[in-house]
Length: 203
Length: 203
Image (cartoon, rainbow over all chains, first blue to last red; front, top):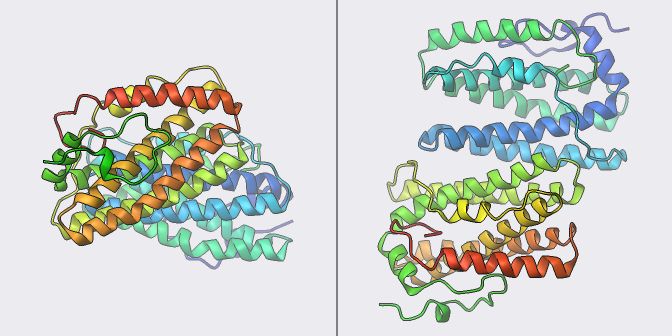
């Protein structure tokens, strides 16, 4: 039994309103193979999200430059996670998504620049939550090599959420970004209050 | 005046039914800045196509592995082309696509595995045409540094079309792939018979 996920991570969480529950880490560690497979899908999706944003805003120089670097890194991680799947004999297979992503996406406002700002902030929040959760796996994973791999990913996830956050400030003023981030962050934590019945990185 | 594009490239063209017309290379060299901008969009699109295929076939191990590598390389090229844009003071801006891509896409059959085979073969053909045309730019570009950059890209484009072609053979037999490739290749050459009025890599 794990008492408190909050005490398990030393990262100062700025974007996340509430830490992951002990129930999530227990579910994750008990289903590591599924989490690894889901993690692979998450990395591919993260690359897809970055590229889609570049498609939508092809003339936003800074956004394009920074999201290119993020997409490259997500693809690198995707490859690394897939090597882990191979090593553990887990075949690539489709997995249904938890409601987390579609619920977050439903919060994106339609008019510009709100749409862009919300898209960036939601990516920032997803990266921040991934950072927290991959860190928890890195702490609790019984396979020391895999644990090390997870801890190694944390720096990139932290960098990514920083990049998305700072980019959002390019398209709105800081006060607006902060209040919107608080709103979206509150919503994100509320989604995770009820643990999804299938083990996922974002269950 | 350039007499024959066919004589301009030493590459043995296996996928392309007909070489690019001299009119295309003249149009391209006369509008290098637009071609560079369009080329940037092409690299981003190519990364997007590879990632979309991985989304559609997440359990096709070999496809996923190879398209991850292609997507990574396309993003690298995207970054490099964008550095050229910056160097030449060309701002990132949207550009409408020539009809080439939507026409090719219209040829994709709906039932599986035809859909996958056609998608792979069309990507192979696009890469082969890019290989030919970037090679022509590499030969005729008046800026020797930029010409060198274009010649440097050719090896990857050739590798990419080979990978797409060989992948198609995983999902159909060789004879089917060859006859379909000949059909699609014929169609592709026919699209390019009338030069599109705006300068594009695939005009």
